[in-house]
Image 1 (cartoon, rainbow, N blue to C red):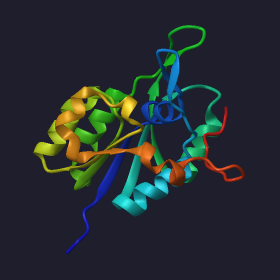
Image 2 (image 1 turned 90 degrees about the horizontal axis):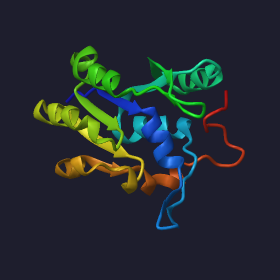
Image 3 (image 1 turned 45 degrees about the horizontal axis):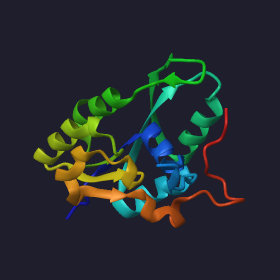
Length: 181
């Protein structure tokens, strides 16, 4: 029996910020962020889910060329979204539409199963579409605090990445965390 072709569709911002950002409620830290090792993450996707292509959707920002080269060398297929400056501190490059388009149309005929990496409820329609077409394999979320309530009906597909922190976090002296600039 032939193995299914599995593609991963990754919301880069949701994954990176979801793993790395500390979360506080009522003045107390309830989640300590950690740096994801993107090289280990793609190895994980390949070995544990048989992912043959991993698409990472990311905003295109001048000055981040080193980051883009690193992700390509690690094995990711980059799909860029033009960005806009929202404020002095914030650049916006919402990739949701591009991720849905690639998973549901552009790449749809090329894979048998999909792994969606994001806890964002904006992907509800995609999850539902993939499930109805028997193509939804897994929804990977950074942590339980980055999980939309809209994912509750997809519980059997959801995997919380924080449970793999020891395997996937950036280790001192090991290459793999996101380079700056």
